[in-house]
Length: 205
Image (cartoon, rainbow, N blue to C red):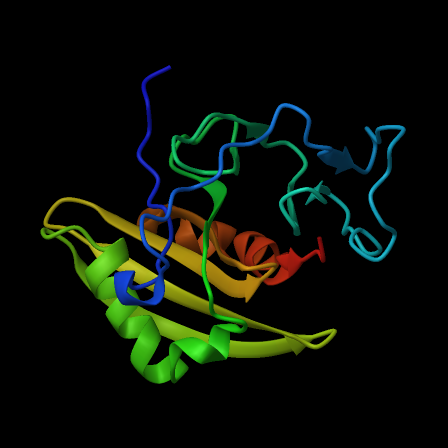
């Protein structure tokens, strides 16, 4: 399969320690995909307590995060990402998670969401030929941990892509989850993909 590029994270370089590198998945990592196909070494009940119908939960207690994804998606290699799942029939409809080390303790240490997110999408997520538009930004606190989730469009002259991103900081890492689709399909799949973005949780390690 041809390699697919995945940005390491949306964190500005000035906020990173010197020479950050994404951590490849350890072959010894305990990674559980649950709901209908549980492994004997089950993840914590807290991390997977509420998995909606037609979704599965992905829990990585080694790298410290979890999220849900549509049950008919399959995992695939997304270069530079720690985990990724995609629609079996629509290649550009997928979710991916990456992380880098950081000395920050909380996502709010990055600054104000109204200032950070537009800059992040424009300078990191968007290619030079794409015009970014922020549709929505939300802050959430769950079990004492802060998460930012935002919806954005990347429009090029011939193609548009819409996505949700959730970012969080914990375990000495800056995590980014991105889930998106072709702009033409967005109205049909938006609610489904929003559930994925909202499900991202940090797991203490």
